[in-house]
Length: 127
Image (tube, rainbow, N blue to C red; front, side):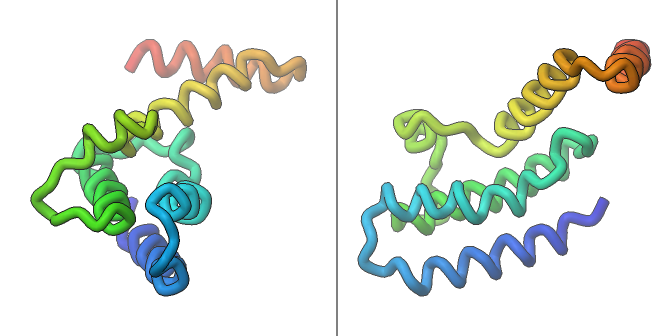
């Protein structure tokens, strides 16, 4: 899967929002990042199997959004900032999306969905 289209849309959205929030607080900008940027990066992540390299690449762009929102230098780590804000890095966001997806799928009442869940569970346990 090519991430370049996703990243291009991510930055197009980012630039559009950053041009309108010059005087907004960091918390407001963070809210906008999570509301408008994150969906571009995480779209269908529960159904995709990103390689470690792809996840790292997407995580780099997610971290850049934090740096921009909080006026941090490129060499500064955002891990502590994310932890203090109670937020996750992109790798863990993808893991959370998959966990929520599987949890919801396991609770579906439809026989067809229960069958699919059972088959997918057996297939993924043998991988």
